[in-house]
Image (tube, rainbow over all chains, first blue to last red; front, side, top):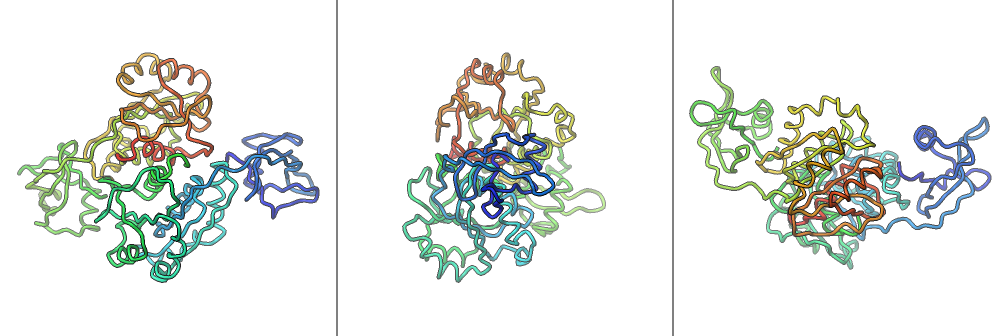
Length: 241
Length: 241
């Protein structure tokens, strides 16, 4: 946790914000702060700066007050990431990493090679997803919460929603066949679509291409989703990660 | 497992190579091969191609024979990676990813902010390390086993070993202060040194710089080691990962 990210929902009486239990643990055990200490904090979807720590007492939990938030969060990556729903045991870490790297719009989509049971996993509940995204922000010292959409049906998304999302952006489909080499350091915003283990099937590729995506490949090596996400984001926007 | 990587140590009578238990499981359960099937295989530190599967019987374990290995493994990354020893629970995955991305020379080094106890972890035993590196190769369809050196003492390495390793290469020290922006898409080979959580301390930075390394930073975001490794490798050698 590199930034205490305060949630406006947790406001307390005197204009401060209560710490969550996790943040309280970090402040007590890692930072070892005492009442009156000035700590580096951010406000969710707001600025970054400092605030004064007030330890918990009988009446209220620990909180931060007298905030001075003059710095802006780091620039977001100018991209929309569409990815086939990863295995549940990979989802938490994947979302943390995506959030830490500055992606602000994520679509988790069904694909023929995604097991249907993945969509029933408890890690897909909004609370769990928000928590993973938040941990990514705290890691990277960012404040702007990404939006994560669930798309359990492939075809209506690609046919009906994608054209509007793609407007004004370059569409890149990670797909190893009939593809050009993935570009390096692009200037324009993009939509990047990453397939499941085993890749998109033929029908899906046809649909993506018909919607205006171009297929790109990364070379001979096959990397895991946890590796390919940072590799691709860094390749497309090396100055932004 | 995207490539069955055969070990020359496991040669059998008729010029074939026995499968390990893990490979046997993969062949039976995922590929579902039967005797006589032609499978895609590689030979450790050798070529890639095809071989014929022979199921296990009473006398011997399953093996692959009649190998035709005409393809070369993917090109390695032209770099030496020196990294502060990660937490034991991160080491296996980190080594898998580094191996999958094509790094062939790795130094795991002590640093002031690495807990001494990490050096006693069972995951540092050569068997465990070799297994992680092998799984990275199988993932990425590579055959060339990386070399991983253990450096439990910082100073003798940087003073005595580093100059020879650095000869003819660009030395890049990941360090967020007094640093230039990390270059993108370099042509020359490099030595990249990645610090522990919390970074290198002042003494260490002085030593690295005295040895001829230049310090580079990645921007405002602080990423975990599992994310920063693919981000940096892809940034330095976008065509190679």
